[in-house]
Amino acid sequence: MDVLTVEKLNVSFRTDEGLKHAVRDVSFTLKNEKLAIVGESGSGKSTVGKAILKLNPSSSIVTADKLQFKDCNILTCNDRQIRSIRGQHISMIMQDPKFSLNPVMTVGDQISEALRVHQKITRHEAKKAAIKMLHEVSISDPEYVYGQYPHEISGGMGQRVMIAMMVIPEPDIIIADEPTSALDVSVQQDVLNILNELVERKNISLIFVSHDLNLVKKFCDRVLVMYGGKVVESIKANALSNATHPYTRGLMESLPSLKHRRDVLPVLSRDQQWLA
Image 1 (cartoon, one colour):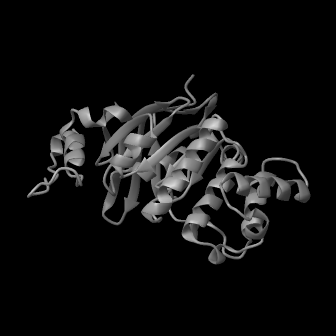
Image 2 (tube, helix red, strand yellow; image 1 turned 90 degrees about the vertical axis):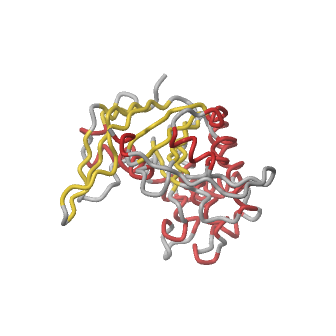
Image 3 (tube, helix red, strand yellow; image 1 turned 45 degrees about the horizontal axis):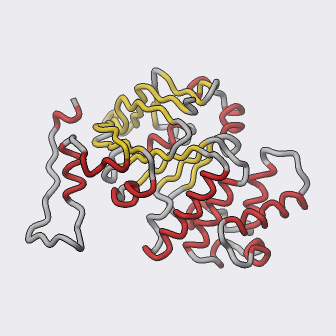
């Protein structure tokens, strides 16, 4: 069953120089899977994720033939309806917890609030659930961390807190916008393992936005490759090495390798016909 259907999604932004097209005719369906959206910076990856939740700024123009979550047409949702979808049914993990967590609220209060907004439970019940969730994201002393402020925790712990906030309402879909980009390599795998375990155990569909092809090849089931706002190739993650589109091939060949020494690292070429 399709959890999310996107058909010919277009996103443009009003600027002093006229309309700038950021996303062009993007179409895909999301089932119970881990779907990656990859591409260079500025290719439109994050814009697609934000458009699904109507999080793009007022300067944006979003159109689509279809933007359907289960039985709900997101394009026609009013503010009240889209707020009921955000968090409870579709959550989004942002890139950097330093800019996503409220600096004047404790970690625990923010996780509890994410639950109480959508469920009629007491503060005590929300606190108990939040501490349990902190334990599930492998925080060793959840009671202590519950009372800390965002500036008192590390980047890796902050990312785990963000995952806890997004998972605690048990949504149908999580959109993870480069959730490990601000982390050290040694911490990235731990965070990914936690996210993978949670989405599989709680049967959550995942849209994983990234520019790391090696990472998505191991972590995801399917990959959409974006260039200039368009999806140029859709391929199974474990078949990325056999990609046929020249842009995907160029991305793969540009990756450095510790096993195979090359005198010259290939340079990615671009063709305006890919946007036709």
